[in-house]
Amino acid sequence: MIIAERAARVEAEAVAARAQAVNTSTEVLIAHLKLEIEKLRALDLSNRPAAERRDDLLADVVPTFRGGVAVSACIGTPTGGAPI
Image 1 (cartoon, helix red, strand yellow):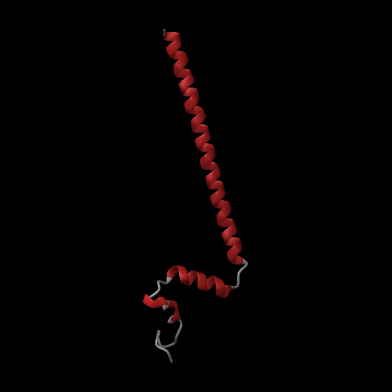
Image 2 (cartoon, rainbow, N blue to C red; image 1 turned 30 degrees about the vertical axis):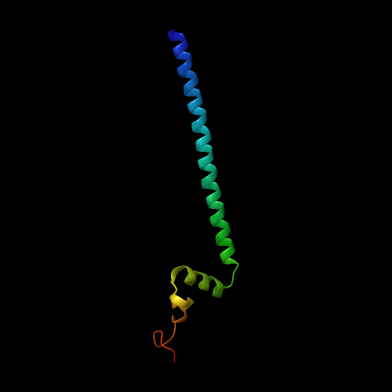
């Protein structure tokens, strides 16, 4: 009886160890792929003209008003947003 219980426990521990190894391997793969994605994004951004990068950054940061008029349309005018 004790031998059977011990064998069952050892088998359960082995199954748990295999599951943990698969889980760890998956986590490592996910982390690796996230880094690769970030490298590719950085490479993509570095190959684009500065004006495009700036426009994308503004689009991410600056919200738009109703009607689709972007706040970024007023940025950079000498009168602080009022047309000259």
